[in-house]
Length: 640
Image (cartoon, rainbow, N blue to C red):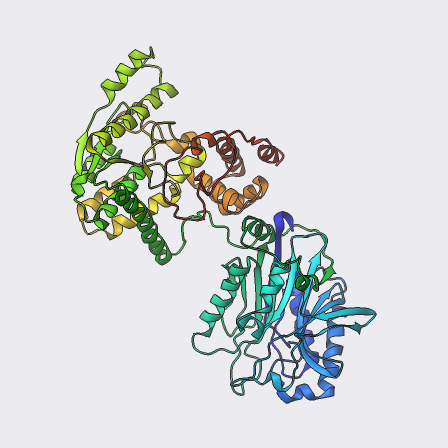
């Protein structure tokens, strides 16, 4: 359970309707398989001990007695099992019959949760046999234990306080006000659902959306286990559809009509952190209603969880082509709409932008084109300036020129070499000394030119720097760091490439598309040092580290609030075939050092549109002091 991960499973066993001995044997076999994989929380379908489709047989004492004996059999089998297991059965309590979930821990039933909402439509007739457990709040004796029976019950674990489990059964989720809402407000952050959901056309899609949507709304994990096709098929066929979700993200989704086990890990510490950051998530544990909850303890051994879930090496970039195209279109539109509003508000018909032939300035230029098109403004109002200097190569220069001329913007070229040499003379700097002064003087000269041209033309300067550069402080203060509207400010470097590619793939101008593809093939560089044999000599990722690693660190630190050691563990999995541990650790240390030391640059950022869940605007998304120390974060990395 290291780093807050807990391994969970949803299981659809094969059942024989009303054959309790057979069903319990199947359940025990699945428990053994799950425990061999390190599962700690295991969920079976509702009424799985008897089968869901017993109908009027539920009124037979023989079946009910056998179900309780079957529960005892499972308890006996699990005395040495390190886990919390939820199984469904019919249970008679005080003269009424309930559809319940029994929670078993180390051979003991620790809690019983009855179903609240009973379906009574179409092929279902639960209300014919069962009573709602909505108002049931009692204790029953099972073996030597007095066991709580109530829907208002949360299962808590001493060795892992971040896991708090509540239960609902099938129909409970499908109603307008599911019990899981109250459970979550009372503190539950993992909901298990013992279900028997039949399959009709398209229902699996709806079921998937329902489970993932509920997990997102409640900021919780959700485990949904459904009865399968071995139930009676007299009138319907049951889906066997198992689903595991985490805060809206689908972690696992079984094929329908399967009788199998779905296993993955849920990150409970992430869910805790996510709830803490949401000030609109108001738990009601101080009110009378939520003080009526029973908090039932269960025991687990504190062992490390082996991770099998997919760790995305590019968390900012959708993995599917279809989703990526939709995302790219949406992001470029958000950027353009932000700039459109700014131009409208100040009644500005001129935009000034520096074009280097690199990815960032190319994306900012494409966004500016789109904003002008939205406003029906002449693209000649976009003054695109290429400013070759000491490090400019023919490739980037030619791409910059072609990009401007192929789009109808106003082309302007200013060679900065003479001006920068004059500046070196003014400050008595040796131009053969290729230090930070040598580099930053060029960046500031370019920004000064853009600002002055904007004054001349009554326009604004469009910023080109991206989120990854801002996170690392890889920007010249009062150089490329500054603009009048920064359209790329919340776009990470790994995503910039896909946005430019999307534009290249969809634009009708084939010459423009060809130019964009060459920009995509060009190494990332500020081009502030003289080229070597005509080639780029200063490659950013050789100096500051691979941006795909830094974007991974950034996402997991800011978006998921994860610790440096946990991020290193996840990066080891995500980049296992790309970087060794020494390389990952080296650049993670660099990330933390720069992220803290360079915050002063982010404290005075120009305006820019937020496009995703991670942004560093000092006005809304990242409030941190410029003088904060990175020591405790770096210390954790040093101890790895």
